[in-house]
Image (cartoon, rainbow, N blue to C red; front, side, top):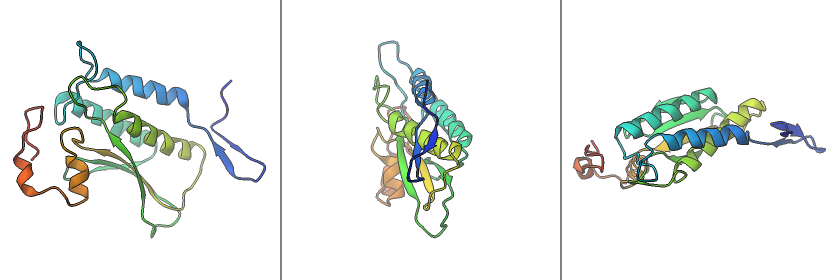
Length: 170
């Protein structure tokens, strides 16, 4: 039998367990998007498979009660309020784009586990002091474009660069 999602330890603090079956199912579902017949996954940034994967993870974020937004760089953020609105958010996640014939878990593992943490907190009715934000960076495999845009390290001159999908960064 699977342990409950949350139980209370002797000290009254919650002990939290993620839903391993849901985590595995979501990783498998994401691995089917862009499955390459030659092996691996090909979800090139801005291509159809990348777009489909981003829609799927956005829906999973909403199911985890996250408020979802997409910034101008194409990064997806799912936010859950904390008890103290003045505290900076704890940001974690990864990406869902891939290199050609990439691995099933490179990027998606960090993305899906972050969503699973958010879902587990909701299911356990556990409030965090800080807000949390799950992030799905855009085009990390092609040059860290999403994370560099957020950090202010993406020069405008790179917007004309062409991604492996054939689309420009702009």
